[in-house]
Image (cartoon, rainbow, N blue to C red; front, side, top):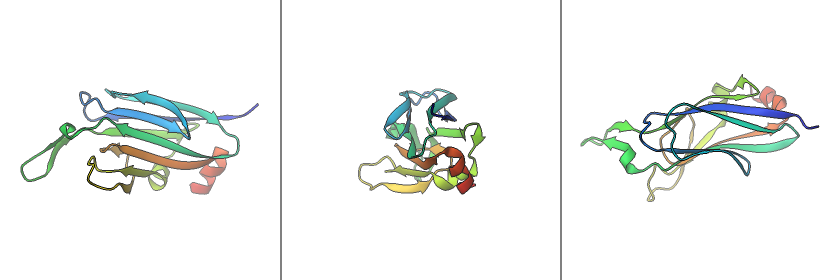
Length: 146
């Protein structure tokens, strides 16, 4: 019998009326899909802990220019964003390790700009993907990266 690990997090929004969408994937399997995050929603993913390489991905979708209010000077006055918090593997919160390991790839919501890769600091403000590569057995990966 194969052991499993449970990956959990919470996704929330800065604007419940914005109809921002969110997906959570591990490798090629979608575990969570919402077209409108309205409030804190728990995300629970269970996968095998057998030897392997994995890619955990969080995707922000459906954001448009109407979700960002910019003043005459070009400053952002308000912005709809998704917030991912409390990422944990088997109830072990990744915290700073998540920030150090995750990559946020997006195009700043324009079709005219090439994609950029940035560190992920819990907030997704542009349509794009946060990716965290990890290996199983999970406890070995945690020991290597703590």
